[in-house]
Amino acid sequence: MSLIIFGICFCIFRALQPPNNSQYTESLFGQTIDVIGTIKGDPDIADESGSAKIVNVTLSGEEVGGAFYVFGKINKDLERGDRVFLHGKLSEGFGGFAGTVFRPEIKKISKPEPGSIVLRLRNRFADSVSSVLDKEESELGLAYLFGMRNGLSEEMIDVLSLVGLTHLVVASGTHLGIIVEFFKKQFGKISRFAGLLFSIVFVFGFGQIIGWTPSITRAAVVSLISILGWYFGRRIDAWRIILFAILFTLLVEPTDVVDLGWQLSFASFIGIMIIHPIVLEFFYGRRKHGEKQKSWKKRAPRKVTEILFASVSAMIMCAPILVYRFGTISLASIIANILILPTIPVAMGLTFISGLLGFMPNFFFFGWLVYVAKTITQFVLDYHIYVMSFFSKQSSLIMDFPKENPLVFLAYLPVAIVVIIYYVKRYRVRKTARLRVWNNPKKYLPFGHEPNSFASSDANDC
Image (cartoon, rainbow, N blue to C red; front, side, top):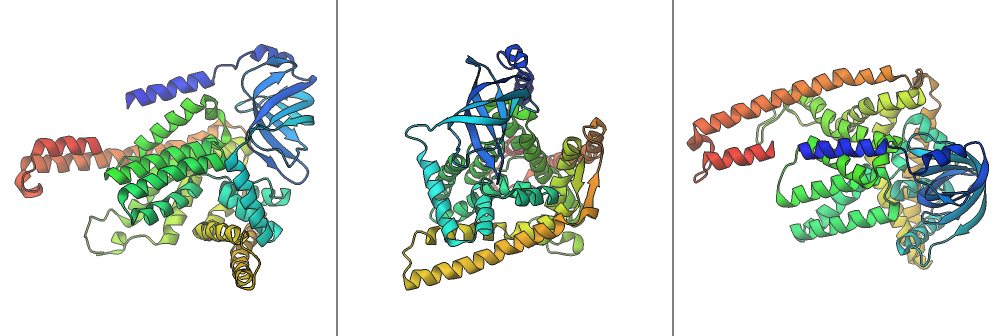
């Protein structure tokens, strides 16, 4: 574990180093120059403007290091992997970007040959969904299913930002977890190995469809660890998963440590994996296996309650980062998450079914199926749109704070104290249990088990 922590520190040190030819890049700030780069990830394209991240950049004929942020009127045909030739004004970067190019003129777009088959299949499926559903509903459904924000209008993007639901249209651990859980259950009925194999294949396939963004890379690592733990019957502590996921993502791209999406992704993940269980145990207690529900503190929480506590836990960890970067936070996001999150798997499934039906011939029977699927899918998506629009207008639930004030991170101090106390207490309980078994193995261990083997296996699980 010390090697993992050392690796994380080394990756952060690498991320803080200036990119290659950084002095040359800085000397061009404020000048209008030719910029050539490759689109990394799906560009965000709204009605009249959009943004993209470009890498392998050449500035005025000289190669430079780092990623650059491009904002302006972007061609809707632009896709990840395209080589773009721009002419615009270069400015200082922010976050993990070495520079920014605002409102450039796109002189040429070079498509890769033969191109990504997976990307073409995704776009064809998206066209099928659009042929079945209405424009606004199809855009939201595709954003849920594939993280495709390109079709979303600027108004919808602003609504999602105000309500704090942007994470729903950015493919992440929520989307991947929903689909992997489905594959694991369905193919796990055939055999445990089949559940493992198809789940792993889908994780890599999903990453190819969406693109290996920081949130998808983190989600893929966590999903693979969880799947392997399920297959081998091992329980892995949450903090071990978190540290390994941080190390792996930073080994892939060290500069992600200053990326807002990476920070929010891990903050919400820590909230759900660490804070959420503590909150549940505080309100409902820790119930032993087979123990009857003797009081309200021994009852299992309802699904709505779990979603509420998970949303609050994620918000606790994300709030200081959002306040520092934007100076605002919306209390409506908790309520909106409770109302929308339980139906996200339904919306994703119905959007997928609608896309499949879009390939069917328009005969009477299939036409009837398409009509039923469209009616049900649009009802669910219209419900989401109504909830988002309603809470985006509740300005009284939006709180304003000073931007970029480092004192907001002091809010993590009481959270850290609670987590430390919880884990120290849990360690003492486990230590007491081990000593009890060690002193009286015949009473607590099955016949044939030795205390030494128990102690070693329990120590590995902790």
